[in-house]
Length: 502
Image (cartoon, rainbow, N blue to C red; front, top):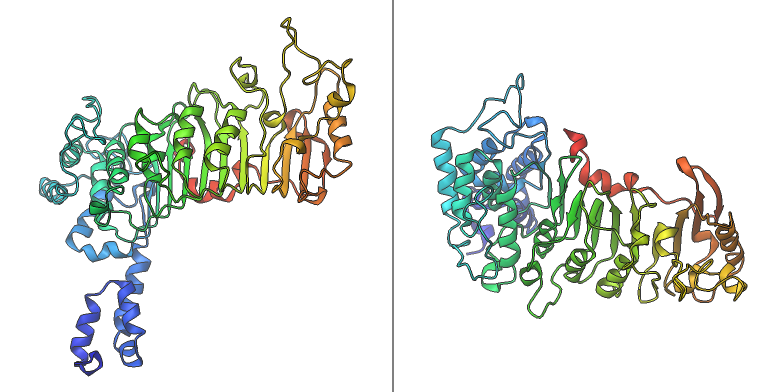
């Protein structure tokens, strides 16, 4: 029997059990179905407006109450597209750590019956997340002060619910949001450890074809994680875990530091150390990685297009920015795909370039598709080598008396890729000879360089910036690029997040 021959009541009943996408497709099959599904589609539209974003800002919405609603009616989870977890949410309901009187929700907490309901939902995940043996690739060592049984995810969720920690609730909720596209999270103290553990298991699970189709976050495209304090940082494990989600396209982090845990590449990368991530844009703001740790993250990327790395200070981590090593790591792992690189740091006058083990020179000619480069001059400028007797050579790689022309006319374009179309540099361009570096830059850019045939002065902006940000001189007519603070992703990913939101 054709569907069009069914009684109208039966057709409507069929439409009502479909998810929103299926209902719309069903309505588009013919005029009759379109008319019959009108009221159902209107209901979907109303619920979509109500549930599109789960926003816990200022605890106007309590996540455990949301989970109860979704468990009572899982269809509500169909409509959620964004989960926003800023630092001023209720992340602990057993104390007033997260909310203080006179906040109306300061003393609200789930009842014993509601907590039992949450635990029952957690136990339904046991087949998806079985207890791991200690030798398993995804196994972790226990840390009683944080997670007492990290290889038992379901047990950990129950422990966190008993402790009043929100991350147990978040972990359950994510399995009821099948069309979620965006997660924005500020980690507060140890209140996201269970969630990070789940992400670790999910990232590993996506490598297993027998499990992948059953895992959550099938449609996640954007994720951002922030640290809530002015000191310290969030673990780089977040990056490896989120980048292991096949659907993810954009990942951002604010105050992330050091390196992923030892062995992270074993679960993050595909067998044979092959890249697995489909992310096309990485945005690291006020972060500071060990170069080896950053290399682990980059090694998993198959098709990165845009890379932004604004380095934080020692308050983030004790790692060194090492810009030339960073460029070298980018060339090695994503040099065949990346099209835009933005590098900067809070203090470009730090001592990174004085490290004895730091690279003195770097070439960008290995980048095959790089179109846009935006960084401080110091990051790409060749550092002075030392002579055989240990004394620094004057102005570059040769003594001035040996080869004045080479010293005075170093052309940055000679180390740039042929594909480059836009160049943005800034710095003091000041050395022991006063304005020597700036004058040399003006001379070399007076003429085109055949090594960068696609780069013109109309697409070049080189600024001599002095103390206080005063721009003394400039080369090229291109508009100055946006600062990292003004970058669209800075607002899209981190508005209401980090320590400034507390």
